[in-house]
Amino acid sequence: MSRLRLYQIVIVAGFVLLLEALCLAGVIDRVTMPPPHIILRDLARLVLAGRYFGEIGKSLANVLAAFASAYLIGVVTGTILHGYKTVRQILDPLFATYYAIPVFAFYPLFIVMFGLGDGPQILIGFMLAIVAVIITTLNGLDRVPAVLKKTARVNGLNALQTARLITLPFCAPYLLTAAKLALAYAFIGVIGSEFIMARSGMGYEISYAYTNFDNATMYPLILLILLLSIAANSLLSHWERVLLARRGQT
Amino acid sequence: MSAAQVTLRGVTKVFPAVAGGEAVHALGPIDIEIRKGEFFAVVGPSGCGKSTLLELIAGLTSTTQGKIEFEGRAIQENVPEGVGVVFQEDACFPWLNVRGNVEFGLRQKNIGSDEKARRAAAVIDMMGLRDFAESYPAQLSGGMRQRVCIARTIVAEPRLILLDEPFGALDQQTRLLMGDEVLRLWRQTGATVFLITHALDEAAMLADRIVVMSARPGKAIDLVETGWPRERDSRIVERENFGALTSRLWKTLREESLKTMGRSG
Image (cartoon, rainbow over all chains, first blue to last red; front, side, top):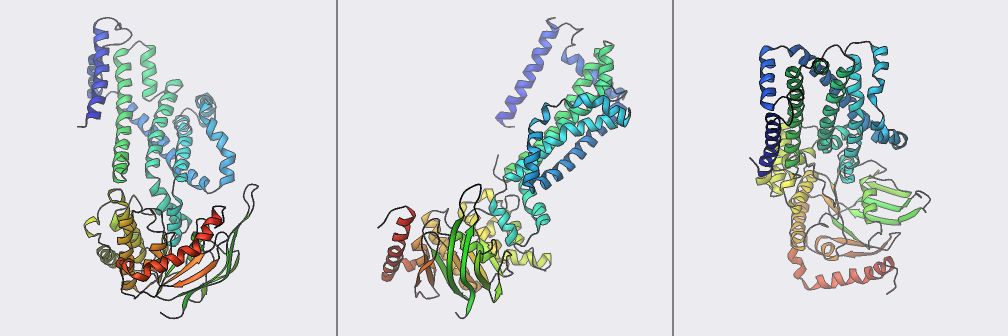
């Protein structure tokens, strides 16, 4: 284990131990938050009982749908936009200010348009994620050295082959960063939407537990979302590290 | 050596004005004939259009006026079959290992994967990269990466190899040794080599004939025949007439370089 990783673990463990101490000492009262060891015990209880598997599966499926659609459409859109300078210049101000728009404000409109099913939640996740993917893809494509594009021409590649064999592989680290952002935004969008108006999903269950003062459910579910999000992001980060190490960019 | 493989007749390149600036007359008119199988070098002051000249011959850009032919066929904004280019910048693909980089040069060849692997392995051997075939460019030195780029070019067996200051980023010792490598490859492959360089000693050591270009717009102002034997290497610099040759090149080039710097001799 590297020294850096050790420090990271020590910081997280230290934070958890501090919370534990504050809770046990009564500085944080139990109605506000149970000690971390109780949250862990409740999480194990929930998981072993299989009580929320349906909700977890539903939320994860929606996150995956939002992530996959935003990622695929975002990478393709970014790649196409990169070839059309004027269109990109027109859209640049929109991209620059996009995250100032409160996407969640459109949620009621999406419910009117798409009903109370999963559609509005996936759409919110998609909308939050796609622009980050487009911007990151464009950023990567901007950095492709001119000499690689010339090499593509010397090797007789057409535009599609150049994108597939040269520019997109060169941008792979940027595309992985785009995936990490898309995943994080998809989680925020879907779980956040479930909080607001949904009738199912992990976000809804957390919200329901909160309104019923059910800490034994709320905190374990929050922890579960955290763990799932961190696990998915860690997997992508691992791939990113392998890719960058191969390119001597660690 | 025999008939002209590449001919340039009245070739001119003018870059159109950009964002309110003025059009740039970069090159020409220039007339050059490159003979089949020779090692031809071009030297000239910075900004005289040497790289533009190479890109015109490679079909990477089009002429404003004049005509370029490769083996009797006109070149105009498409890279002709049989032409390979090695650039000054590192053009290795960082996501492919040495073997993958070299095999990439065979993409356009209609041959099976076994044959591709065999040819790539042969060129990797020829370039002294056998022990690094599975290494990625980031694990190699600058000189080795340039050898990978040369290997990727020659694996396709081009009849004309264009070298755009390929050793520009390397130290002097590595440049001399790479020069030996290129001379060996030139003899082994029988290809014509067209070298762009700013290093007079490099041109004098490697080439059969050297064109000296004027300051912008670049024109051919001198053509020097070195008279070296085909079997040669970097030890040619020890010859008495090597100094005289580089002196002649410098004498012609000095005036032009001073013009580039806005001074007179």
